[in-house]
Length: 265
Image (cartoon, rainbow, N blue to C red; front, side, top):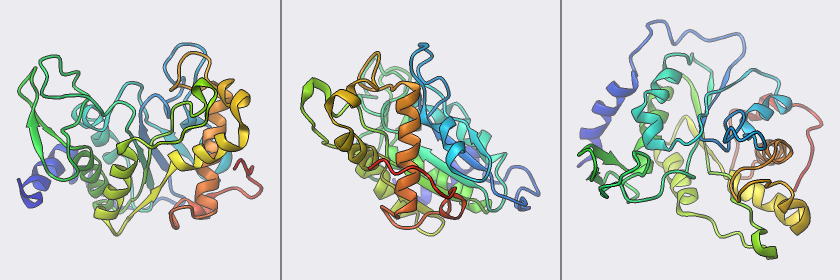
């Protein structure tokens, strides 16, 4: 299916034309965050872990609104109307950070489809859910559709790669990036004007390499994905540092970084 035939459908689903007057700028931009449990406040809600999103406010000079929800993928976040919720809030000049990947793998064509797995591929491939018959799109499609909706309202978008799992698990450092890291970079490139990319995976990987085995393992109290509050804070610091040093080029968040932010890698 060609891109030109998909975008009108998705833009309607995301509410691209909602809220007349939504293009009116604020005095200062809001930063909205869309993501999964690694970004969400309280993380996996297990009492021991947290997401990095709520810590970002400590390193920027403008308001951060964390809309990340545990257990979501680009697909489920879209289907639940959560991208639409942000679209109905953003105004001209606002910034939206989109970060998914941890829950996007799997087989949507399976009869046990979990409603999170994206269709394999890097373009406009589609497949059918083996459980519901729903048309499933690729990771890139969901992310680009959301990004284009926000940009149409005058907002700017930062597409961020997922945070890594524990790269020192087993006592040996290994930083092989999952495919969704490259997918996020490709999505930002294909959206073009109004979108930028931050390789959060690489920034945190750099930090873990510097921290070493013992210190990194201490940040994962329950599993190899969700970090302690300290680990979440460090992930926010790594994200801010990636923006400061323009790891992947400049982003619209750069002017709003606080002076004197920590250097963690």
